[in-house]
Image 1 (tube, helix red, strand yellow):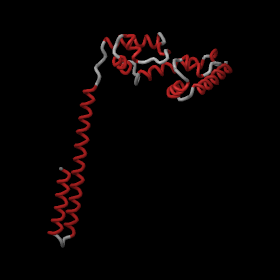
Image 2: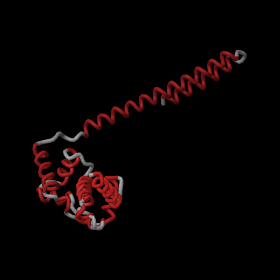
Image 3: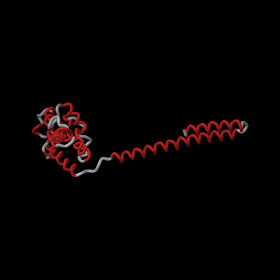
Image 4: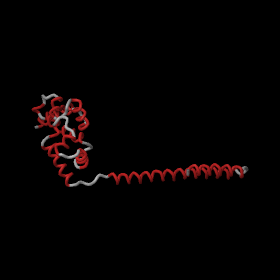
Length: 196
């Protein structure tokens, strides 16, 4: 409404000035320039007001949506999750889901997911498990005693259900496929042995 009012005033004002000062070209040009400046300023004020109010609303929503700080229960649950996934190598279990951990620890799934996001700094459960599996696969791929293992076997031994998900997760984590990783590290191993 404010913009439409300013626009109407500018158009009406320039028409009045044009009729009143029909013989004075300089006054008409001044009126048109002033009207254009007024329209631009009105638009700027409205844009500033609109976006500053959106920023305020967004910042209020962010403050309201912040998850609560860690509790002792969260820390204990984090330790349980880490113990199961890392020390007991639970990440190797094929088809592992948050529901499996929730059932094992007798906790709701949302608490497990929250601990994974907040305490373990992972985007989600799948990302955390895939990172652990890829690290395990990297060890297997670098092991000279397992160089004869096909990539499929390495993927299965790392907890993946098939070679496709294994290759995708491996490439996301390392930037290379498992075969490329094995070849690069094999060449590095040969160079090390040659230098010794």
